[in-house]
Amino acid sequence: MLKQWRARFGGATAGAAGGGETELIALIAGGDRDAFQALYRIYFGRLARFLDRMVRNGALIEEIVNDTMLVVWQKAHTFDHSCKVSTWVFAIAYRQGLKAVNQRDEPVESNFELEAGDARQEPEHAIGQQQLQQGVGEALKALSLEQRVVVTLTYYHDMGYQEIAETMGCPVNTVKTRMFHARQRLKVLLSAHQGELL
Image: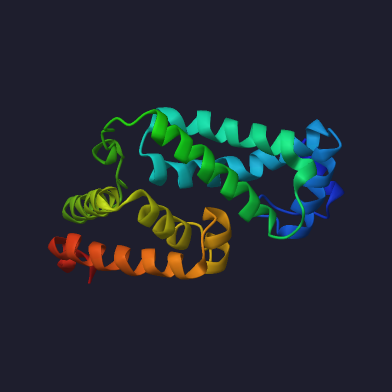
């Protein structure tokens, strides 16, 4: 199905920019299941990474992505082109993630220690990288949900403040304030890893 979509929209890749995605949304609004499958494949990985940082519960991620894409399927006809498709989809995922976090307020264990390192690296470097990754993960966990979302959308999804504001449904100045406080907090929390960051 994805090959058909690529052929149909001029060889666009999974990171297809606005035009192709806008056409997909229009097709989905008309009930086109192939277009929906193509959009699902484009967004599954991106949303999973975003939600992993947001909800910190691996078991919930696929469920929230599926809930998000169900809303996309049901509400595609309401897409009004006032923002990019990615902003619209991430805003839905953000709301679905908030709902999941509020419904299941339970601590979640980190799986950083389970992630395999690169066998080609020296053991000391691999251990240092693992400790740094764990430190960054723990520091992100210590941020408020809103700050964590702003940092994740900025650094892991390359969104600008305006797009983040649209995604989160708040003013741009609120996003800037959250990022300022997040950076200050991360600076303190990551001071133990300063040597590894340099």
